[in-house]
Image 1 (tube, rainbow, N blue to C red):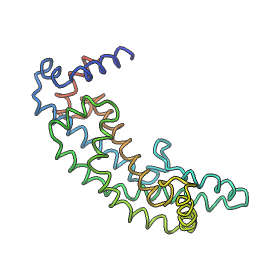
Image 2: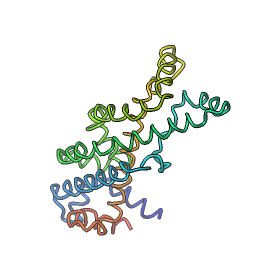
Image 3: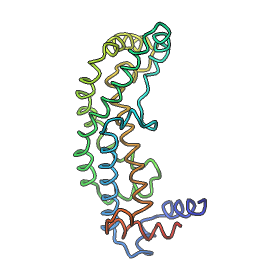
Image 4: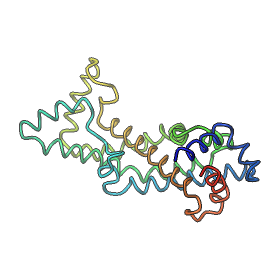
Length: 231
């Protein structure tokens, strides 16, 4: 395991692109195409996983917790018999994220299709966060605009959400709460996108680790030889 990790790191950090071209006969076009296919598949898989019932709520890796400002208040509400109201808000937040996910698919795919060879190089040599950084840079702002109305409709059904916004907004204005926690809809949208990019990265890594299992000729051609060299 350590040897595999060392070999993979060495290949990427010393210039995977040049190494791959000499060792496997890959062209830059082939290598970039492989990265695009891996990312597109990873993005589509992540959206499918997260965009279904319990995609967020049932996954501890991405489950959206209560905002930090609400945690102490939630404890008090539980003590006075208001556990159900806290639970309703927690469920609504995660259901909102799940319902927003399908809207991300087209924008993510378009981001991959517009990827340049230089983008692909940066992803290959950029480490574990490179995929997240690529998608966040290309899609975070426009997806925030798309997600907010969906998240707002879902959270507005819960009375505690409106009350939270009123209190947290004032607290943030006085410096008593983080600005990110001041609005429940903004908070959920941000956490939903964090979870989306995390899962895309995980799905993309699975594809690279088993390129042959994908059944894709280009993934097998690009990542198959490097997997053998790293193992």
